[in-house]
Length: 71
Image (cartoon, rainbow, N blue to C red; front, top):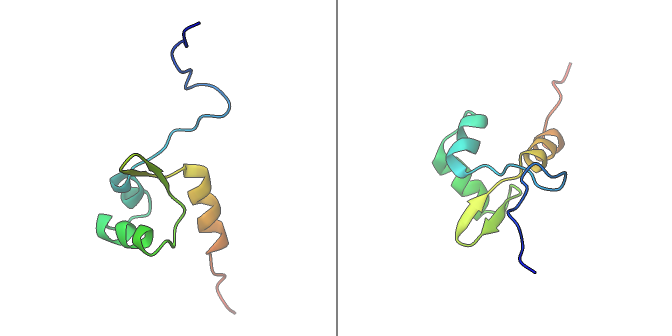
């Protein structure tokens, strides 16, 4: 039995984003995102030697680190 092609539209697979994409998403620099990864301050995945981010995990991370304005 041979495995068929991976169906990326399946419910369990999400599109992962790379460092430059996340930097644009956060309106930040690539250097800053790399520092967050090096300091393990942001959720990331290692795929081989590549660093990737799950957009849903990043949304949750942003929500957890949001600060309310004080009155």
